[in-house]
Length: 61
Image (tube, rainbow, N blue to C red; front, side, top):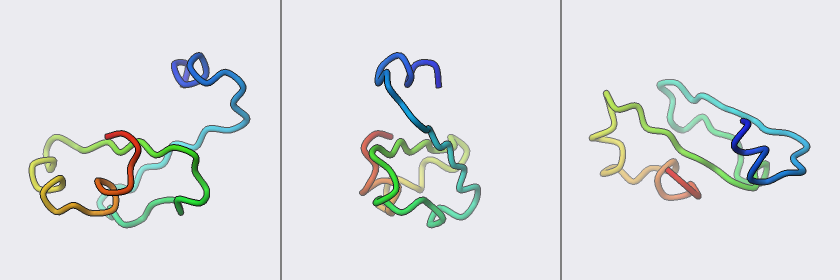
C-alpha cells in the first residue's frame, strides 16, 4: 500500500481483493483502474496455461 501511495500519490481508495479458490470471483473491470493478479506458487503452473480472466485481463501479474 505504501509503494502504491508513493507511486500514484493522490489515491482516494485502494481495494485489495482475494479470490481464494474461486478465480472467477473478481471485481468488475469497470470498478478498477488497474488490476494486479497474484498467482499462488502452489497452483501457479496450471493457471497461466488456462488463460483465464486473471491472466488475459490483468494489467500486471
